[in-house]
Length: 267
Image (cartoon, rainbow, N blue to C red; front, side, top):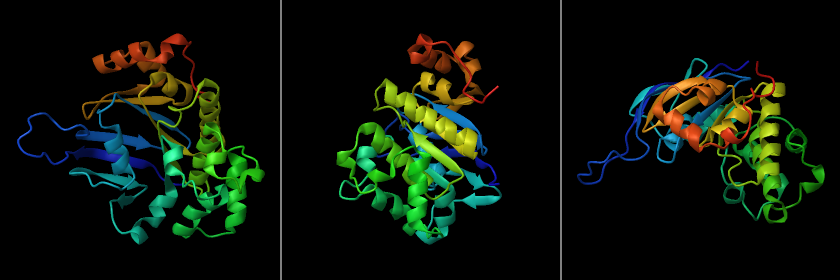
């Protein structure tokens, strides 16, 4: 089994042009986060809190000023493509907007084969593509379709299948349902929950909405102005927030419109 994915005391500051006094958005201060296979964690915060910066560091797309990212016992840092193939296969990203990340000129089969080829994944790529589509409950008949011929929900499932094709240990999902209507949102969240429960994936769900976190994640880390101000079971954050920032997110969250339940499979 793959070891934990850990961010330990991560700090990061964007270069400041001129003499700006205001702290630039995305600054991080001593962030620590621990992800394990078969668990789901939400990273919740308002715009500018540093969520995207932390995800870029976890994806080895940006180097922190201080702190380390490790997968198991192995340190992770930005570098040449060849040095990161092992990590790109183990940790996959699901974007917020699949329409912007899926090449409209490519078929579904081509989109799913591309990371298999780039990461030198062994095995029969056609079989791996078919298996990935089956795991996200898309029919094999869509293999030759292009993104423009699919619905928003289907494109999001294609984006998830593309990540799943390389058989990763972890998924980093950036607002994966923000552009979907409620029924499609429920379907995608249910799919992600099933992948965590049944396939043992580790999931980091990045969102601004505690209601979405409550649907899927056992624990929630609240990020505000580059600091984790609360990290607790999601039901505890919702029912008894321990910081003003978490309380503000609770007030703004759609979670207040529904009863709070633990995610399926979480006691």
